[in-house]
Length: 459
Ligand code: HEM
Image 1 (spheres, protein in one colour):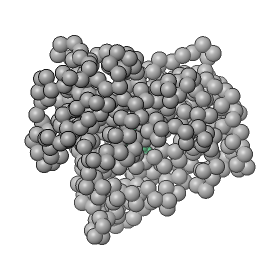
Image 2 (cartoon, rainbow, N blue to C red):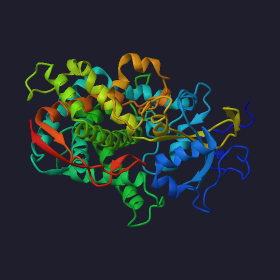
Image 3 (cartoon, rainbow, N blue to C red):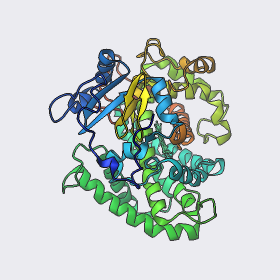
Image 4 (cartoon, rainbow, N blue to C red):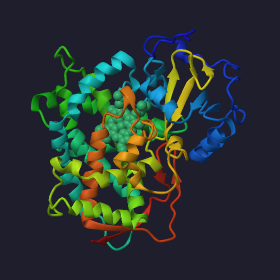
């Protein structure tokens, strides 16, 4: 099967070779418009565009967007092939590098194969039960404090408010409480980096998003480097201090450069994804008051005072809450598609795809496939009852990816979602105007274009 092998991005220049014209002509599809390819129609309607292509060409098609030719592989079998990657065919580092290399170089998701496994093991200590319990107490305190300032009884834009709250929470659970006067500068730099990672102009010219992002990275690198010896000395339960103490298998500490790269990436990986998923979750609860009541009843069933913190030991009791959150992520997966680059030739559904080609799997498409999800646009958390979930293909619902690169913060994400729901629904009834249908941008990370107008009333 293999006729050509590429090294990974640290080992070979082959990865920079453009795809030769004609290499993909045996695959259905087209190159889109001259010069810009499919970029504009894809940006304008990412879900509709892919659905139309799938209808016309099937579950494997070629296209050209963002300056690259590539092949889209759709459906749960494609997700399984690419994400499980039993044969080490697909490089996430070369796939994601196009978007993230300048801002988050050597973040965990941008490492491949053996090197990735080594780093993932070292980072995993920060997500074990002990540290997680400590993050939860920070989340409980931070969410309760943040929600006290949200207004009752008048229209309120949910999306900017949750974005700010998620950033404030990350600052405490990731960086620790004693940040002092630098906190605002660190937050601003971080926001600039995340915005730049999805900017259309990829060159860091002054005044552009990329320019601000690269400047933000310089500040963050300087800040982390200065803090590492302090954290090693002082200790602390926040994620940064955990990484400063994390070790390789031989007991030696991670280097400063590794800690800086992992911390910047972790903060980015957590921030927009949680913001997006909590926004679509709250929208669904507001639009489906029956489900809002059910979730609130489950919270009440914990028999805790509504003002108490949510205990770590009770997280697994919030079964309906988790189902309701999952269904929101099915409809709007925070990362709608995952890029890779093929390291060797491979075959899928009878098509030979050559080494060096950019490919992507589309979670948004899979999450709406009619054969997997009857009435796919309808919000129905019962799809995630145990029996129904077991009967489905394992790679039909993949908001956190799968295989070796499956989201390392998955448990953190569920924990924060449950903790937020606990405080939010104990405090507020959330509603929207009956005829209100917010318009969502689904790429690169789903968000409501108008900020999502909700009303919060006293419960
Ligand atoms: C609802 C929230 C989240 C969603 C939907 C999400 C989704 C994902 C997905 C799809 C991937 C795999 C990307 C790929 O295979 O190309 C991923 C990777 C990752 N995520 Fe998350 N994520 C979320 C929250 C978080 C949080 C809170 C953290 C950290 C605290 C985090 C840390 C990471 C890391 C470190 C990776 C790279 C894992 C690896 O390459 O081994 N994520 N995430």
